[in-house]
Amino acid sequence: MKPTPKHLSTEPAPVVTRQGHDELNLAEFPLVLLAKRPPAGMHSIEYQDDYTDPKGKVVTRKVTISGAGKYGLPNTQDEDVLIALMYLTLLDKQKLRPDDSSEASDPDAARTIHFTRPQLFQILGWPDIGDNYERLKKSLRRWKGVTIVYENWAILTSNGERHATDETGFSLLDNYELADGRSRPKEPLEQAKFIAPMSSQDRFPKREGRYRIVFARADKPTLLSSVAEKPSPATPHSLLLKELKRHDIGGKAAGNFIAAHAAEYIQQKIDYLDFLIETGKRPKNPAGWLRRAIEEDFGPPAGYAPKTERERLKSEEVERRRQHEEDGRRKKEAQRKMEEQAEAERKRRREHIDGYLRRLSPADRKALEQRALADASGLSRELLQGDGPLAEAARRNLIEEEVLRLHPLPASDGSN
Image 1 (cartoon, rainbow, N blue to C red):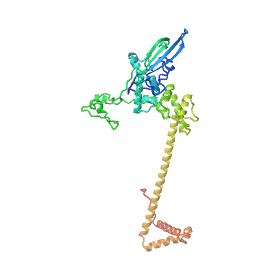
Image 2 (cartoon, one colour; image 1 turned 60 degrees about the horizontal axis):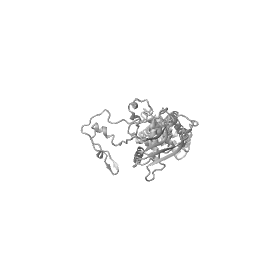
Image 3 (cartoon, one colour; image 1 turned 180 degrees about the vertical axis):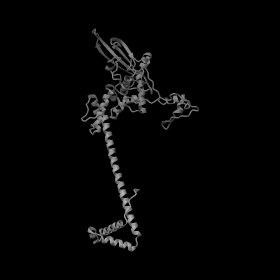
Image 4 (cartoon, rainbow, N blue to C red; image 1 turned 90 degrees about the horizontal axis):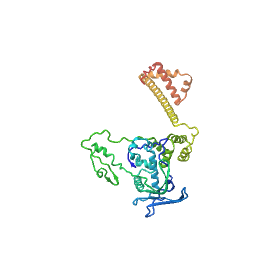
């Protein structure tokens, strides 16, 4: 198994042609220690039981699981890694197309899968950190060193027939390769002579506990048709994992759901939960609700509208609010302009009247005021009999009306 940057399409096919057979021998006895560490000096596990064959003979069957001396036996954490590798094998498109001519021409290709360590961590639910890289490395070493031997077992052959065997031994991992991600980016750039060649020690110096990457320009860079691989687009499988993770369902649980159900089915249940949250009906435990919705095939909630319809209604509401705000802004702007025009007109009238009065001699101004007050009638005359602001306002208004009668205000030119 080769963890490399090669893009792995992880979308499970809706129908998988059955290849091989379920071998209950592997499930009847555990392949791993039920502890994190084996007892000192323990390098193998042995199970045995007795059964009666069709001839009535009692046969003792035995299975022995042996680990490499240095790395030892696999533990419960290693079992998770093995299950994740089996899941990646299921998702490998080469395994889902047995009629692929490339596999027929290269048998090793059919036995090899490519993946990245972050992909495996995502299935396992492990954080993508340095400690887990070392943890995975040790687990692969243990599985590589494991040998399983069955004695006196009935083996299911490729054509579906069962036959007894005295002894059968095998390993689960033929080989694996871990590629250091730091070495890959520089190789095509060095080949293209964009950067000068360097040793790994000079290229990746470590200072104060952190690695640095050093590049030096080559003297004569040349062009290649493709210097670096294009980033892989997001797959439906990875997008679905991200959606489940958004509701706190990740790791093996998410992988199991994706393997067991169509993407459209899972996305529908996720949309049911999104609808409940958006409409203020959030479940107390959203992740638990979503798990049950997928497992028990929940129907749509009351009043449910699909995501596209909700987005359309939301867009229309946003547009209505925008239009309402725009109408309010326009009304305020029109009111402001009217007030400015009215103020400008009052100012022009005031300047016109004051200018006329300034041009009069004291005697003429006194005569104008007397004439204006003498012509007062009704409410204005009553107000003039008193004192205070109202009397003064009535006096000023009568004088201004007399000025405008003698010297009317010219029409506005509209410049204000």
